[in-house]
Image 1 (tube, rainbow, N blue to C red):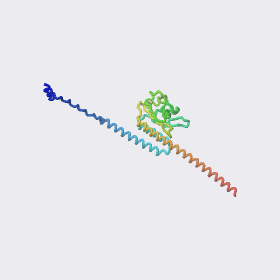
Image 2: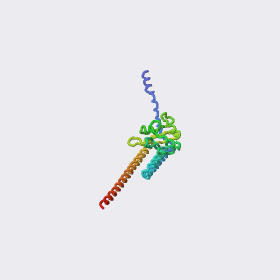
Image 3: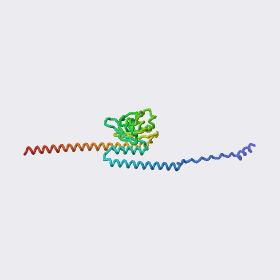
Image 4: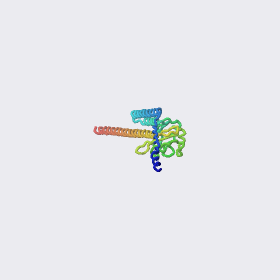
Length: 245
């Protein structure tokens, strides 16, 4: 009896359950239309950057150290490449305050307002924060930032997202390049980096213009000094002839 049970167990061995087949991993593929759109956008960005670079080189070569047209070109190029609705550049004046020296696509009311409202380092504005911190600053929505109190400028400029990067000379800000958007639409890190490149170019242009003015001033001084020496020598020569005659 025990023997037949053992034989029955051997003869009726349990079948192993079938191994579950692993599902093949789904490979996400970008839709052809989306891939094409992304490629088109990249090509457009590359073309825009080439065009902006050409404009800047043209402005540099034709400026003859005329700084203003070059700063305006840098401002416009930065705005267009980063798809900003507006842009401006701020520089320090002799009174120590900062004024906008260029503007692109800002409302005339904003331009008039800024002429009589210079900016100083502080938390109340984007330019003030950049001057205070010496690094790029972006406010995604100026109306939602409790520290932003430069509201009259916002009302006239009508921007919501606003960012600025410093013009640094020897680590110290000498101005600010700002970009704005009418909608709440923050700039990407790549775009902020690109604007920083334009700010660096502005600093180089400002320094070159300053050095050129210094050389011109020194040359004028030397020329005037030479004229005085020549005139003095002529007088002494005439006096000497008069004495010996």
